[in-house]
Length: 186
Length: 128
Image 1 (cartoon, rainbow over the protein chains, first blue to last red):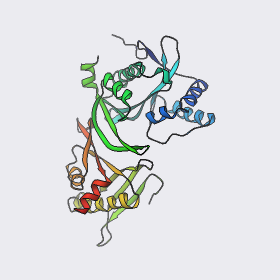
Image 2: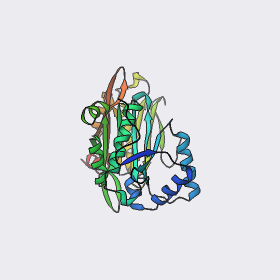
Image 3: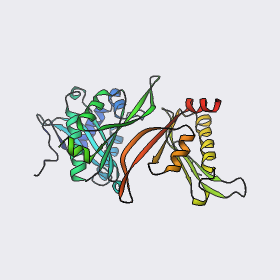
Image 4: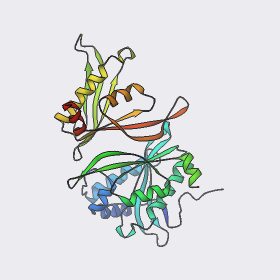
């Protein structure tokens, strides 16, 4: 059976023109709550020019060092986020996922979960990877739930690895193996 | 040797005869969180299991916690590397993450272990 690799029921994976993605990333990255869920590196506000340079670099690497997709809603084609398979270790058949839903009104609706599922299908059935990593800050409950629903298992925690507003939090290390995923999810 | 904001690189030599044994690196430093990762290597098999690694690790921990003032250190160790596991466990590192089947070598898959040590744990051990 041929699968549709890029379309789910709620969202689809897409490619964007530079100006469209640049506008979106610029808007999303002005939300510090979003930035803090996305990454542990300090949030920085970038000019449009800098964002465009960043995207051009991703476009150059796309299909080689990373696989980048935007996330759009099926019902109205709205651009709500991005996802990326990166840090690909071809000799070990392993990669990591980074994903962000940038539009706050699209949080908690299952869009991220479905995008993760699409990304895993792509990782396992198109790139033939054996396992996929994802890290999440312990306090990010939505991301945790999305990971578990998509088939990730908790593989451990890097204790107190993030410091924010005077509080330390663990970073959770998630992983999913093709073997267990194809048994449980497909 | 190489030194920038996120990496501190040392070579390791014997005090006797100044023989070059290996390297010790603190890398992937995230200053805002006070975190970094240790990477050690003693190159020649004939220099393994002589206590060099233990002493190097002690020195690097001292440097990381008392000079760089890091809060925690991590180390990546392949499941099959018994020597490294013993070395880091002896220094107080705890296995925190097991990336199942992350390595493909010699026709089979192995786990990649992530170890961690907090500065406060290291201080407590030193005081004891």
